[in-house]
Image (cartoon, rainbow, N blue to C red; front, side, top):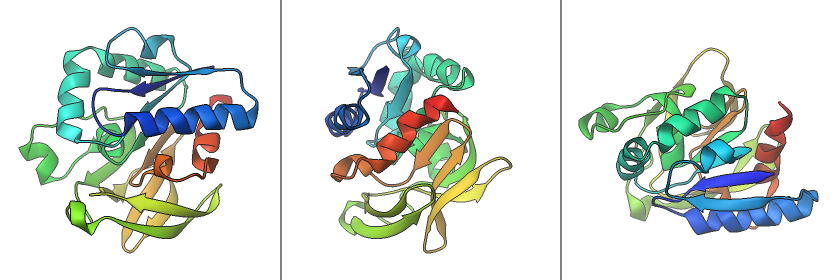
Length: 197
């Protein structure tokens, strides 16, 4: 199994480490590749779009041809996960900030997101969430977005305050928080098993 982590910007290395740990734990023979260029995602079995700055990541993946490969991979039924900024990019609809910054979205998850829903960097926090299919999970939020509207066929996996913070549509998983910043690999395990979807 080959897992691609979009490596243009953001917390790439943390996802690479988390996936390596998860593959080992599940006894899956595989590799993790952080990539900044076209041609890698299309050769992979799953892809992760990490947190970072959504406008920057968007510009780079669209200009480098990586965006088309992510869309094709998703449409072929392979697992795609976006965390924090990655959730914004997976979404079909954004808020006024997304529009103002001219951030192009992949449109793979039928939700509307709000950027910086919980405030700026200093409003980062950790909270225990009840995540469907996972159980109690210690979630790290850093300048996090949130889902404010959920479309048809989207399963809500977790809520915090008035917001949806984790959602799934078939093989697409979007999280407002950072599972890679904890030692708990259960979300990555769940994600890799979506290959069986």
